[in-house]
Image (cartoon, rainbow, N blue to C red; front, side, top):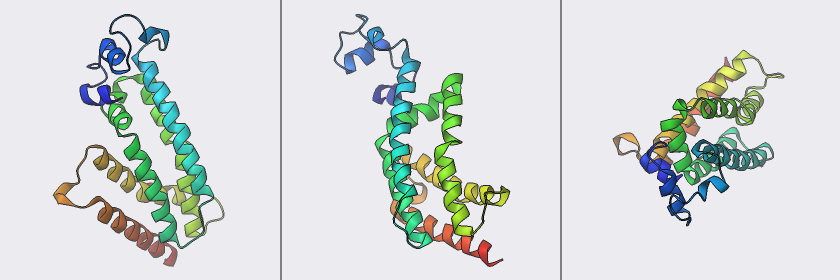
Length: 185
């Protein structure tokens, strides 16, 4: 992933990948493990998904607290997870759209279990008995900002010399303000 993140999916040659993992370059060792480079992405995405789902299961059973404490707790885990997988995230951002099978897998992942957990958390916060359009819209508004924060983290710097931790703290506070304003209407 580091080679692909640095050189792009197409720029990371099979020989360079073999050399990076200790195989003799261009001796065919790569093909004993993978059919092609796309398969590496699927393996990495699978590991990423399994790991985040484990962390999201922890979110389901997080210690009950105030909405602010819960959102802070979730955010800290998500941000740390994304940082650990920065190289994969960069490759998927830069090259995933040019690989139809990878693009479809990303879409399914983003609209799957992680989204469901965020929707359920939002539903609970606004006191709805069931998930409806309003719950999904509020979830999108709140968590799309987190997606932007993760994007900025992937690329290594925040605009205007902002501190990531301060931005996250402010985002949590404003998200809770937003939910409280909705509940109060």
